[in-house]
Image 1: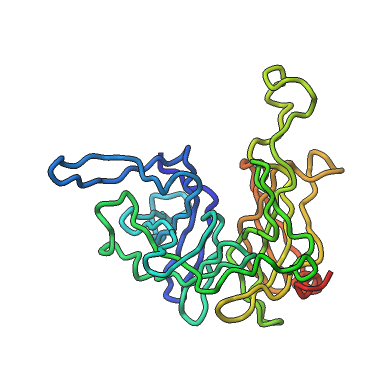
Image 2 (image 1 turned 45 degrees about the vertical axis):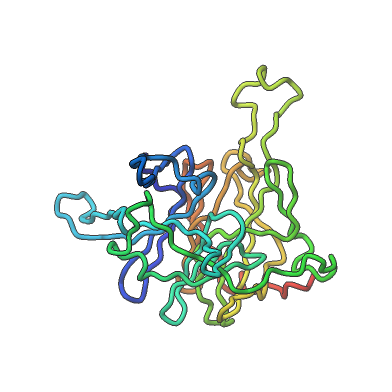
Amino acid sequence: MYVLQDVRLLGLDSGEVLVSFSAYPWAYQPEHWVDLSANGTYWEPQDWYVGDAQLVAKLHISSDSQSPLGLTAHIQKSETRVLRECPEKGLNAPGTKKNFGFFSHSGDVYALDWMYPTQAGLVNVDEMAATQVNEFESLTKLCFGVTEAPPDPTISEAQRPWAQSWSFSCSGTYHADELHNNVNPVWLEETGEYLGIGHVVRSCYHMRSTLECEAVSREQRYPRYGHHYTHFFFALSSSPPFSLSRISNTEFCMASEIDDKDCDLVQFIAGMARDGDDIVFTYGIHDVWGYVSRIKVKDVIASLVAPYED
């Protein structure tokens, strides 16, 4: 039941390592303890796990002579938290909690959820201590919120940060200017910005032919939860509230080894780091195979334009 998916790692200045991951409903069905006082106690499902949930924990790494790699790593449930908005504390962050990007700034840890409208908020790592666990919950909440007001929905199309920033859910609902994050942002010394990668889904589940669903084999169906992800680089300002400062002037995906005229149906970038003059990013194909690619930092910077430019 305890499956870590869409994993991202962040090394802190303290030497500790944070690991964030998704808890999909079919992989993790948690429960929590409910106190009914006179009626006793019982277990029931956590309603805030319906849909996607983003978890974060401390990763404990130690040497192990018995391990082929000489290392072991584990997380503790008492130090695992689920990121949720806490309106009762004035911490609001609407929308799906998934694909967070964590980064350090001035000794603090921030989490980036939506890259636009930009939702970045402070994460209190001290609240992840085992002594801070809430025994009445399966996993203790870690409050996350953004203090900035959302953009004015009446803003004209010409004033939108990126004229092509449209995404849609596989339920068929379109969302103007809602772009989701992919990776942990990295600092760009050359420009004094945080560099990230965002994505959109270009198509959803449908048949390859006009035959009825029951008559179509599994191989003839496109992925149920979306396919043909396209990615783009973006940059955030150097200090809170980390507003969107620039965005790349094109989308991209990686050429498929199976079909040289197309990208794979499912490609998703989950990791990014700087290696000298290169940006290295890791991505998955069909949730099965992992790849590594790199691009020159100067080329990434050259692709970034101010958000109000075409």
